[in-house]
Amino acid sequence: MSVDWGHVFAGRVGGMTASEIRELLKLIDRPEIISFAGGIPDPDFFPSAAIARAYEKIFQSNSGAGSALQYTLTEGFTPLREWISAYMGRNGVNVGLDGVLITNGSQQVLEFVGKLLIGPGDKILVTRPTYLGALQAFSPYEPVYISIPMEAEGPDLAALEAGLAEKPKFFYLVPDFQNPNGTTISLARREAILDLCAAAGVPVIEDTAYSELRYDGQQLPLMAALDCARNGGKLTNVIYCGTFSKTIVPALRVGWVNAAPEVINRLVLMKQAADLHTSTINQIVMHDVVSQLFDSHIKHLKTQYKERRDAMLNALEEFAPPGVTWTKPEGGLFVWVEAQEGVDGTELLERAIKEANVAFVPGSAFHADRSGKNTLRLAFSVTKPERIREGIRRLCGLLKTVD
Ligand SMILES: Cc1ncc(COP(=O)(O)O)c(C=O)c1O
Image (tube, rainbow, N blue to C red):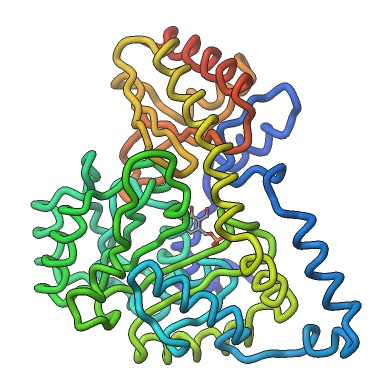
């Protein structure tokens, strides 16, 4: 007799569904396709030489690479935690060493947040749209999502108040240049969210994957910094998710979480159970690299990505047919397009790949309630400006035919 796997899977596995657009996106690796699909940094900008030198240093040191190849503390490599603690301090978040836990990217923090806070049937607040990977991290814990619509300035406050009245476990946010729609929450809205959430006793999960990549406008305070300022310098109501994936490289898988000590203590136990610790050698390398070049590298990235953002916005201005609107992000990697009413983004993607050799991600994937059928996420990060213009020209040509 063979095992009926469907029968023995835990109930929560039902919440782990593969995205239907995955199959379509497998087709986009062909060189003729201009892809705006991958929300990833451009490998041409990776500080590869500095990374190579950092590994060489480890293997050439007199003491050998033994300790770099050994198990390490669950909390993470101490010099890297010190670097992060100082970096957060410069950004108004005073967490000592004990307030920093290194993780395998910030994706692991989201998974831990799900495990820490969500019981089956618990309500949680997310924005509409929100980061797909967060939905994937939370769904196995069987939450009931309440989606708070995003306006130009941030989440709709009346909807937030109504959502908070449902006693949710947390509110998950990407305040800067949000994946997927590129919007940034204004300072006034950040304060209002913190007011409302604090009054309801609901924690805010702040995901800052893109916060360093601002191309114009004024840098806004982190919600974690505003929370510290309200609470005598102590991080209290916010769990902060940080990552080096978009500022340095994703493949070393180094991110971190800052939170109140009782939260960090629990997360350390989760990290221990999950994988003991993040790769020792990768943390040592990341520490070496960020100590040398964090600020100068970000300056370089901003110049490069700004050019691409501008190329995409200019091309949309030039080619988009009437009835199509889009966001004008001040940073990050994404522009969000709202196509004409009635357009189905998934059907459009199929046609775009076949007829126009261009790809994007349909926006409905980023909606917990599966709405947003006529929205599209366009990443400008991995395409050179001339190709961006050509890709947008082709995509807009297709949009003209669906009216
Ligand atoms: C908003 C957001 N949060 C978190 C992540 C996860 O990144 P990482 O695990 O590489 O830090 C991503 C990745 O694209 C993201 O867009």
